[in-house]
Image (cartoon, rainbow, N blue to C red; front, side, top):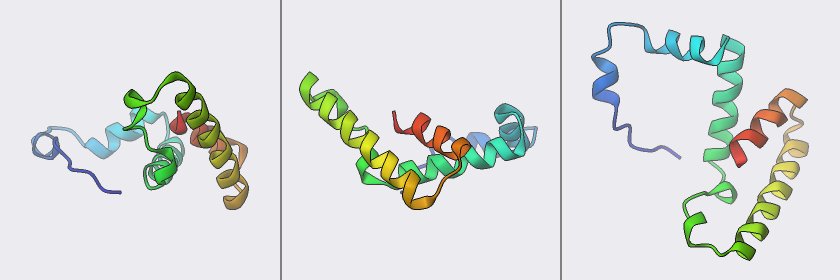
Length: 94
């Protein structure tokens, strides 16, 4: 799922390497690549949508959270993710 990059113009004007800054911010190239991969996995899966949370009641939010947790566990098993990858996936699902 590709979104509109509203900051592309600003990023093009930077005086430093934006990609290098992403790696520094993440802590390492491995951490950045792992985080980026899990973020894309969550963003591309409609089960993990977050745009309807403000319209849901308390009970629906609870059910939605359980559904997302169940789906996350299913994806972890299907993709045979490592513990590190599974942790990142759970961070992005919330």
